[in-house]
Length: 252
Length: 356
Image 1 (cartoon, one colour):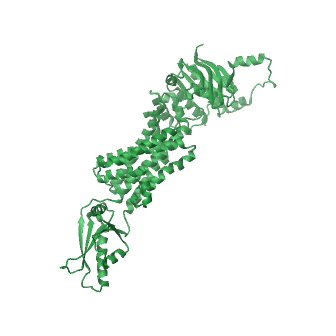
Image 2 (spheres, rainbow over the protein chains, first blue to last red):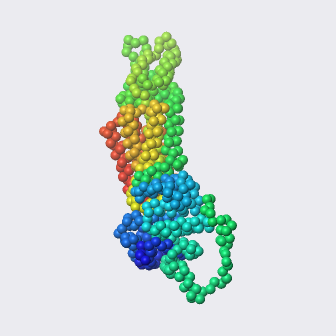
């Protein structure tokens, strides 16, 4: 496996507070890599440093062989970034926004095909602010794909979405991965990480405390003699909800 | 960069307040002042200081309500005021030569374009002389003979004063309020941050935004000038070239005012602190920069303040170009002062500018 992102001893200090305390990890090509952890663990900070949006205090970061200190511009060209919150002119239509971002990368884009790939072709004349939460996130992912990047970064893409919207966002993310793009995602939902990620790094208070595939992490825990206090039921309430309301994409 | 301009321009056109501030407000003022046009029976009359003021007739004249005598020692300045329509006429009252039947001669000068003001003034003076003669118990012999001289002039209407002022104000508010709000919101909605994750360079983001505002506000300026010219006879002395010169000045003014906007958006801690800060910059200029009335109407102590504000110079330059067809020789000073403000403001804006 070939690493496309190499992070080594990364530190980020805000005054005397250390938000990221010397973490190291690698992300491999074409995998979905999850940064997990509670709020305030330093996930977003780490992501924004790799995305070239934030200065680091120490350590080194290489993206596809480019050193972030020397070659941030080359990195910007091959990554797609989705921020936790909006980041778009609220009153422009989706087609216009895609035109804008295509302009920023200096390229021509078939807006219709792009919107179709994220299931928003019927919304192409809607304004960004008129979209539902799930649609905003799908659109946001579409804009990260405009310039056919080799890596995309998604910061808590499913926070605040209903179960259906989360599931079809997972499908979309898997599709993006299957088409050859590496995906780095942050989340604080463990079920999401378990279903979606090929490998995860668990962060807490600015440190990575464990890193492996979800299965292996679970196996390790079970091997250590861990048992769930209650017997596992055959279905969860979420399964009931999805069964009743259907898996179909909901157009709120 | 052009992609940003295009997107930003679209965004602006969809924001009702931007359109209202740029077009509607100034347009309403232009309409109001265009319609009231002078009005009232108050006549401003220049008094030639060579007049004989030690007589009855002068007392009657100066006591007459509706006539406001304005002494002026420089005859040339007085004639210029008359030509521009600042005053309705000039009177000179002198003792007659011995051969005349009346004791005094009242010389009235009015302008071709004086309109009803000149007519009313003439009839009022006739009436005053009659009344003074009656009072002097000499009805058969008039106290003074009246002669009238009419000088050539171009019409200087209220609109010729109001429109450049409104145009300047429109540029000021669009530049300051628009830029401050838009940039603050772009920061707040993370649009700027999202741009950073793309290969676009930072100065291009600002330039792209600025360019879109320039296009937007100058279109507004074209519209205001067109309405003024075709509906209210606003004077464009050299036609198209005057119009282009006005647009050039507008662009300069707007760029400087946008600097204030950047400064405000950098200083403002939250969205609610933008209006007070922006008003702090626009309101004094709105009132003191000759937007509605010439700054010479303000008390002495206010004049120095009026004379440092950039809008004062922009307004003056616009008026000089539109009505007098001023060339570079007359414009370099106001342009230089506006540009100096630009340097100062941008230096401060760069100092306080924040991307996040």
